[in-house]
Image (cartoon, rainbow, N blue to C red; front, side, top):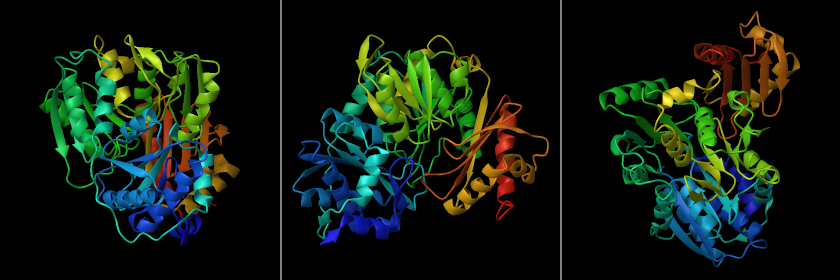
Length: 476
């Protein structure tokens, strides 16, 4: 017999900002089974269920990981329902309606040589406390020696599409030409039928047979150029895409300009008349300065921290939501919209903010909705293959004397007004520019975020910081 905590510890896999993440080679059949046993046994005394749902993204390693999870579910005397390749929010939504737990096999936006597992209790995404319990559970199980066949059930995919097509008139997008940047997104087979059901003419763009690690917080220059070309060549009104598991949106306006995720979230929340928001500290400060919301709470980066605030906000406000700088929108309460009821989905979702933005832009172009906001511009990027240990060392040295840290990186004429240690090191300068550094919670990366009154300035800040950090083994 194997013990789940020992198998997980030996794998060296840890939880990131959302889900357990690691190299594909670390996710052996026994490691997947260990996580599954630890998760299921940790919630069996709180919920009554006989089914556990499983979904995957399009990574080459995902089917075998799903088979190992299903085998573990069977070892527990439970039945697994396999929904195949679909967006994470689609799996989560159906599982919550059926009040059963689910496991999504996905590494989200990180490279294909890595993968991960996301866990949902019958009432929603697990918390940071749940993660600790899973890592330390002592569930015993037999070694995985054979893997079951996979038979796909389409129920979750169908319900996800119906969730949104039922919210709007079937001619809501009539006359719109919408490009779907499909790449290897887990929802690529659902999006075209969904937009077409609402009256749009859809143009499929660049489907890939290989996994493409789209990061909606750090859109590549190549993808920026593609959007401009597609928008012009196909006369598009809108471009929609997502990250690998379909929970983070990437949308472009009428001019082929990608919107920042937090600006998309702001416009969505405003159109839905959301009263109170929970947001990671990295989001654009225009959210507060636009004065369109009754309350805004800032959290650490990661959906579990945002979700943890919903119960608190719900005590004082009827409509509660959250979103992240990556664009993932979390609906924290059931609410009325467009004379229809939409149920809460407190996990990142890519489709809701995209459709709500299109609804809001029926009379006013998207770019004008963006330009009407307080003009604060954010930019972010990261250094890949940068050890977390090295990131923490640099941040610790920077926290001690931030002005000197910036000086050593070539910023001679800047002064730090305040620092925010909510998550990493966020430096607010005297000129109101913001520089924010933090190690990624999902991969060995150092992320840098900047905010300024000028878009070019925000990009220059990030580029200079990251370029100069790479020149130093240590800042002293």
